[in-house]
Length: 277
Image (tube, rainbow, N blue to C red; front, side, top):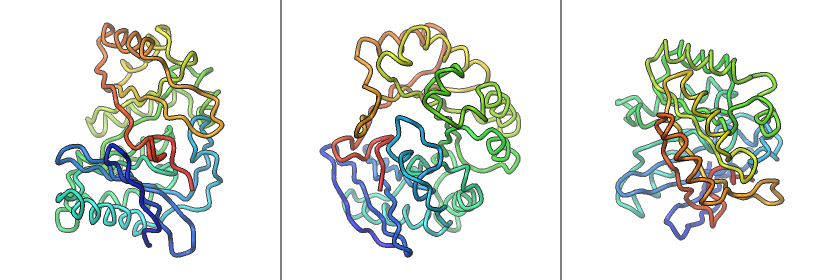
């Protein structure tokens, strides 16, 4: 695998275009924050899930990445981090192109190698797998005791709205996901992160916040609120500061643990949901 090109954002985020041996291209991102360097990596060429708010979802899935291709992304990002910032990769997030749990074998093997002190030595608590919600594979992660954190891309806490934006919800309903996450927690005792992008006038009302708070109580979890990153010809808009504040306040009042996550690398299309090749 070779680094075909890089772009550096005004906030120091770096986007990489990786050329694979068969000519396919994938993207990865280096996200610096103080001495913490996060490698956001891809698990598939394209994606088959077609979530409406995600640029990668407009691509067809060409194939899964191999274990070595996944790890090579981390190594390339590590090399760039040392060269530019003087420190290596501290965190790895499987939040790039593709659905990690639909490439289960390669993803979990790469996690095993990355977290092994004898190979790459990245602490398991600093590795996160983000899924759009494959219930049976969430349970499998728990049964296999995979050494990583789990994040669910939720974005709507009722099935009607989630069906509109995430086709996977038709076969993996919120009830099914809640049961799977409860089993995952029983097996691992690890809390889950619920990722929630706010879309203006779609899922950012106080009623939506109440539904999210109720859903979060079904399994030990914390909530990451994420600002929407526009994509070309996208159907959604970023929620206003006022609606975001009211949404956040409602969650806090309901006792939820909430983080506001600011996007990095938006000016070079390196932010959440913008990766496409």
